[in-house]
Length: 559
RNA sequence: AGCCGGAUCGUCUAAUGGUAGGACAACGCCCUUUGGAGGCGUCUGUGUAGGUUCGACUCCUGCUCCGGCUGCCA
Image (cartoon, rainbow, N blue to C red; front, top):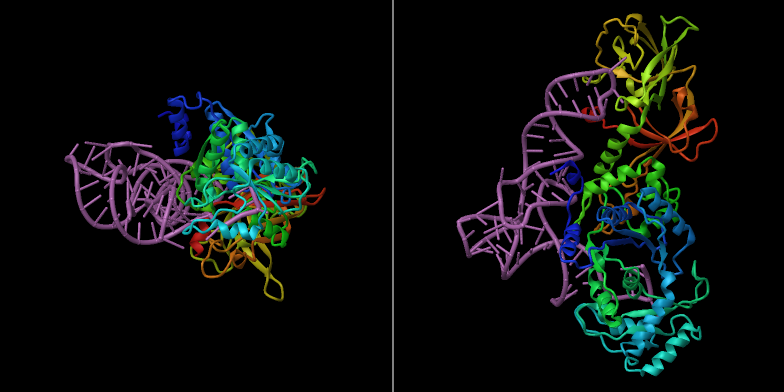
């Protein structure tokens, strides 16, 4: 198997498509789509669906549509349409000029509905929602026929026309398919096709006061667009016979629906309803709060489209219930940023360090490699002075036995500079360490050409004189339980919110080269993690988001 | 209870009657001016009971367990 073939893991959906292509089912055409309802922001589960659908279209030299399933005006908003377009584009799924809307097919759908009325397989029902619900039966008991089921075609046509013309109030009438009230599949018990909704639609305005139900509309949308493979999640499996029934009755083109299991991720929730509640109840700061599992949040946090694609390829697709470990997502972004992100030095929790044998007022520059994984990234100079900041965590007065960073009387290398030795610890009256007094060894300067001594530890630092101040936002998982959703003990996801999911550091010290960093730019802060410039940055006051920490074997030793 | 799905390492996913493999995680070792990256290695799995077969994750039967379905939401 070649390298290229290995990159695309086979899966049951591609197997089905291969089979169709072998027997010429769709004349070897492949046309997929991503059909979101614009009632919220897209999340990582949608990203999987987008990559799955677009990836198939791309690999089979087919087409991919972006289509908004905007059949319910009361929940849908233009803001969501715009965010969805932005997210799909950012992921790189190429829908060419095909940003489509179910609402563009409302006339066609209406005509189709009239056809079914004329054919005698759809009728207008004037019962209340309660009555209809009672007659639907349960999974164990068959439903009962509506008293209006045998209305004449003429009367149905008249009533349906008047529904459309706005002669009735919301809920007064519905159009129903006449199928089978005793079907073991509840979806076939005379499902509702149209309801009356005097609501403004974000695209059609007040043109319509009847709106198609999802089950009626969705199969038609795919049929109208000539979709070959309608890939959706498992909960629509029971609806497939209904879509097929509609298409059969109409005698129109049939796509093949294929269902796969919904995506779940540890330590988060994935339903739009729950994400919306996190936003509207103020548990997070908006849909793109970097702690959210939305695509826009991952973008803001510093994830790349490439890392999401790699992740999607790694998780695969199947029909069994699944919950992917968020560690795999983190691996995917580290893997990508390791190759791309320039290294810089930044101190998040600074403690002052003074080199007592370094002449006052003197300074020099050392050369640092921007990215050891990428020669083309070049080198830069970093300013070295008598007073520096290092990380509080990089000093232990009473060191752990495996701690090989700075400690009293101990030596450590300052990254790209020289070896220093800790001579004295200065504390304030409360016993807090406020300064470390050290000496440096001139023989060990970087680039001096002198054979270098080895020391066990290397730590990062910044010049106290030249460092710039910055805000850094550290994110942790939003929930402190691996599966905050779907508990059966009476608790719900809100009970598992992690109160420490955001830590804001206001006085981080950055090396001065960062002063010109642009919003969205990504860096590795050496030994700490990957960070990117947040949109909240202002001139002279940068704000960084921690995308993900580096793998940290020291944190494991400590446990 | 009825209908429809599903069950393979801790997690995700391959193997479509012929050596149960990969990735992540975990754990070792090597290397290292990032306790990063990289390299090498180890560990762990076919829900259950039968059947068919030279051979079963795969086919058949029973059982168990899990998920979805009773919106004028999608």
